[in-house]
Every structure is written in C-alpha cells, then in structure tokens.
Length: 407
Ligand SMILES: Cc1cc2nc3c(=O)[nH]c(=O)nc-3n(C[C@H](O)[C@H](O)[C@H](O)COP(=O)(O)OP(=O)(O)OC[C@H]3O[C@@H](n4cnc5c(N)ncnc54)[C@H](O)[C@@H]3O)c2cc1C
Image 1 (cartoon, rainbow, N blue to C red):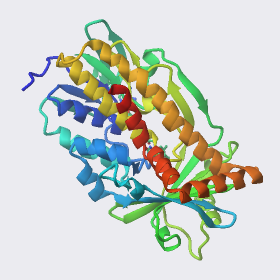
Image 2 (cartoon, rainbow, N blue to C red):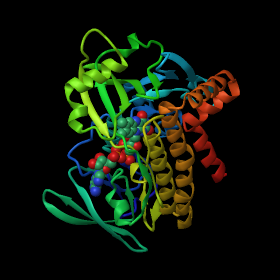
Image 3 (tube, rainbow, N blue to C red):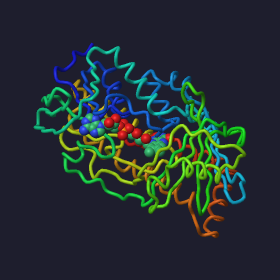
C-alpha cells in the first residue's frame, strides 16, 4: 500500500469538479484538501445531463449506481421545429450499446453529484473538505505550492504538493496565474424556469427536448427533483436589453411559459434563474504545479449538456496523472499531457458542438434552417451516421481520441 505523501494536493472550489477530483485522488490513497468558499453545496439549477462517457468514469469512482438511482435514465433526445411543432430528429444513445455499458444519459442534478462525492470522501481520513473557506492567493516554487485561505477566523497559509483550481468560471486561481480566458460572452442571457407540471403529458416519450425557433427557441428537460417530486426545467434565451426585473417578475415568467407551452391554468414555478453565457477556454490549463479544471478552464453554453461532463473528465484524467507522478511511476513531464490534450479536446468537442447546437436552435435564415433539418434527418436515418452523432454528443468520441493519444 502506498504511504500517503505528507503534503496534500490542494483543491480550490468544492463544486462538482473539485469534489470529484478529490474523490479520484483520495481513492488512490493520496492526501487531498478541498476549500469551498460557500457554506454549502450550491443548489442552483445548472447541469443535469450526465453522458455515457462520464457515467463510465463515475462507475470507476463507485458513484454510478447512485447517480442512476437518483436520476432519470433517458436514451433519447429530440430536436423539434417550433413553427410546425414537428419532431425533426430523434437520436438514440441505445445505438451505442455495444460500446458502453451506459447507452443513455442520466438526468441527475449537479448538486446531487457533488453531495454524493462529498459523502464518499468521508470514508477517507486523508481527505478533507472545508466549507466557508475561500482561496485568496497562491504562490509556488519547484517543490510545492502555498495558498492563503480566508475563513471567519481570518487568513491562514496552507502548503501542498500541487493545486487544482476548480473554482468556476470566475476562477481566482486562473486570475492569480495570469492566464487569459480566451473567447467571448454571448450578448443575451439564458433563463431557466423550473416547474412542477409534468411536461411529459404534453410531450410524451422523451424527457430531453430541444425546440428550435428563429424567434424564441427553448428546451425542456425532466429532472428527478426533490420532495415535491420530479421537476421540469424550461431553458430559453432572453434579449440583451431586457432587465432582470422585466424578465424575472412572475407575470413575465408566466407569459414566457404560456408562449412556449400554452395551457389553461397558471404554471407553478419553483425556481427562476438567469445565466450569462460564454464560450471561453483558458489559454493554458497548467502553470507549474497549478492546474485548472472544469469551469475554471473552460465555459460554454449549456445546449448539449457538455460543460460539467468535460470537467469531470478533466478531474479524472488529472487525478490519474498526479497519482502516477507522486507514486514515482512516471516522470513529472507527463503532467504536460494535461494541457496538451485537454485544451484542444475541449475546443473540438465542447466548444464546437455547443456553438453549433446554439446556432441551429436560433437559425433565422429559412434556407439554412431547412438545410439543418435535412442534415439532421439524414443523419438520424443513416445507422452509421446516427451512431457517429451519438458518439460525439455523449463525449465517447473525445475519450477514445484521448485514449488513442495515450496508446
Ligand atoms: C443553465 C445551465 C445548465 C447546464 N447544464 C449542463 C448539463 O446539462 N451538463 C453539463 O455537463 N454541464 C451543464 N452546465 C455546465 C455546468 O453547470 C458547469 O460546467 C459546472 O457547474 C462546472 O462545475 P465546476 O465544479 O467546475 O464549477 P462550479 O460548479 O462553478 O463550482 C465552483 C466552486 O468553486 C467555488 N469557489 C469559487 N471561487 C472560490 C475560491 N476563491 N475559493 C474557494 N472556492 C471557490 C464556488 O463557490 C463553487 O462552489 C450547465 C450550466 C448552466 C449555467
């Protein structure tokens, strides 16, 4: 059995990527400490879709059964044309059944994933998760890192072997490293309305639906929800000039839902959330002994449900590389692989797909829309193309590409 190194790997940020990285490290017998600025796991409605490639990784961390049990298994997703309210294409992850034990997506909210990882970390005495503890600054030399952590009692210094910045899109760690967050921010914001009504009654047969429209597209997803029972989330775009109050007041959110999904009675809205939307990738995922993972390294629009999935892949790959270096199974230079491979993979598989998904959802040119739908239909009806589309959408192709580079 490996003797834990005296200096822990430090993690800034206890979001889903930070705590999953910590679990992947702790399971190797290595000491790890997570510092989370907030007092508890953030329950804002963000990621819910967990794809096949990620489910395989969560299986390796002993989490997949609980994710499946607490989420919704959905092999299908549908793309609709709002103007005709016709299904333009239906894709089936079941076509990947020879390639993965999980030929489906699981709709499991990200705060549940984070809580599951934190529960498991309690089994490892060499793993610590500290809430209400903000990483304020960092220094590093060739031998280790030191961070300053602020909590209610003041500021203290903590030494570690490496630091992983999993502190989200506004990452303090990325800024401290002076690494540029290259890309752009979309002018409009996205709104998520979470409702208790069962949209499955209106749209039976599939719980992941993208409804394309040149004026106002939307998408709707079922999540397993809370004590109120299952919930549906309706995601849509807003106009850049609209203020928070114009968008978020109950009359406006009711009107928005009725416009998309008319019904005789008012909706029961349990959450209203507005999000800025970005397509950005850090210019580097590593400087010396400090790494960036998850949203600290890359952010993207949520169409396709890819951002957190890729962040979990970062966490798993980086934890493995660090473990091999600390155990002296591999030279320190293998850590270069992390930035060398993950950054271009994010651009190829996450940025490109999410930008294309958004463009297709909002395309205004009738000829381009017709062409998009025709391409989708052809892809859906050709078994090899259908399967290739699902491999890419589920991130299996990105994992295979990474594995091929290792071989
Ligand atoms: C509307 C919406 C829907 C989405 N849907 C999907 C989806 O279906 N599938 C998918 O894969 N992705 C989806 N995403 C993306 C997903 O939510 C993010 O990729 C995910 O939250 C990234 O996790 P993270 O742990 O890297 O960062 P975060 O979840 O942002 O967590 C970062 C953590 O760091 C903490 N922190 C910040 N600064 C510090 C500091 N200085 N010190 C200590 N702690 C700090 C924060 O409090 C936070 O808890 C969606 C996003 C949005 C907005």
